[in-house]
Image (tube, rainbow over the protein chains, first blue to last red):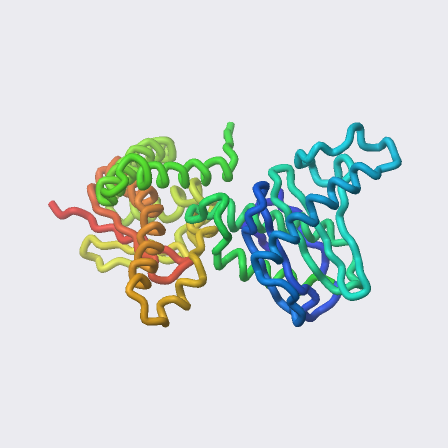
Length: 170
Length: 177
């Protein structure tokens, strides 16, 4: 299978294990809290309006990252997280939380791009999938000559490839 | 010995070049910006064709030169050949690339499709803007083809046609006489 014109640097996606639409919704934020993308595939319950929803999500992640770093009992991370974006996996980073009705998976890139994916509660570890989605973002959004960084993402190619990929995630 | 450069680097540089000429140097003069970008492409094509024809004998006729552009030249630039070559045998050639590399990641705002179905004065300009910004990125490859051919002794005019993406056609009209 050829991805992105044959570049070997992009990681191959984790093999899809289930068919059907398992993703509920997805957010992409940039470093400044601007919601670059909000995509919804299956969301019967909506408690807030879009603006409040985005603000709440961004605020939640900010607080959660801070909390998880401050409550870290191990000395694996050298210092407390001072709010600087770190490499995924470096320092103390939270990557998901699960309730009885959904699972929220999170990834932050070193450039401050945050990707949030909400799926059904029995989903496995989506860290590799989120990295692949970040790769899609780089290929189809960042490298799109018609896209201005910092503005909401309106790229057809990105949307279709993303929908296709999320459909295949367990 | 082959020296390589990162493709992301070239892509970003081209994007920035077009953006610079369109949005900063010649803000309200798209024709001038287009001409400057095409002139840059002309120089690049000129030099590249010098390199890539180093070990070859002269071309016997125009068709041989065009075939060189379609096969070897395009492979050096884009790692693939031109997919389809058409000619009217009277000096016009159409080179079609079914998945032009520099357009592969370009995509427009999907909501402009919905806007055009509503009665809205601004919808035609939104679509035109998108088409115009896409076509700005094609002046550079057109210039490259023109520069390469003129270095081989074939003065011509090159234009691009993106009526069915991601395929892109380059129309080469050889100047008579």
